[in-house]
Image (cartoon, rainbow, N blue to C red; front, side, top):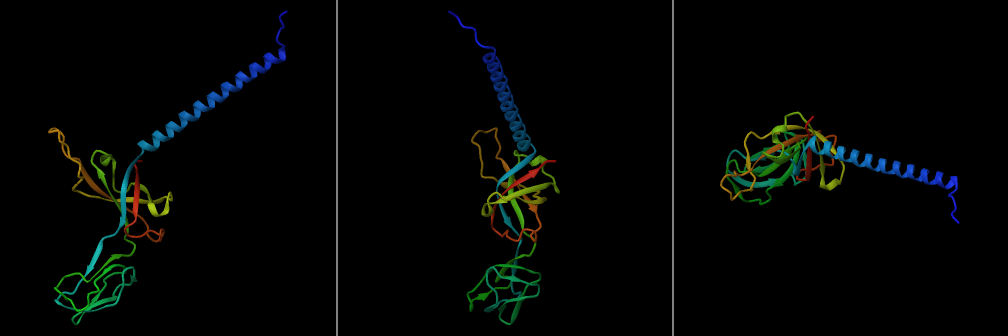
Length: 216
């Protein structure tokens, strides 16, 4: 003897089908949205994975030859402008600007020819993030003044911000070569990002970084 399903059971099956349809729709919508976000993020920025925080080095030397008699600073010292850092013969070597000492010759008694660096420093507040960008990886879309962000290995995913300050006018060799005759070697150009060093005092010369340059 056949039994007819109760109306309540039909109602529950219909309800479950509607719920399943909504779940599928939500999943599809989420996947599409995630894909669009990823696509926009990928196409709206230019990435440089290997970069470094650095500053222009300033070499301090005596204008005349002489024997290194004394040094008055150590690596890592932060000095003011017009600070005496060493004495070669009777000449006192001074800083022209404030900065951080990065190298110091400690071999007292050695004769230094004129112009040979005794102390090297970087200027305070002049740190930049620099990296090389291949000519076929978005170089045509990079402009001076564009917004950029970067992360440094020492501080995980923390994001820092700056602007594109320099694009080298000439290329540097990338080290990538091709054996096929109709392929030319890929050239790389140095890109520098300027940021406010006083806002990010934890950033130091020589730290490894990754750069994102925003096209818009």
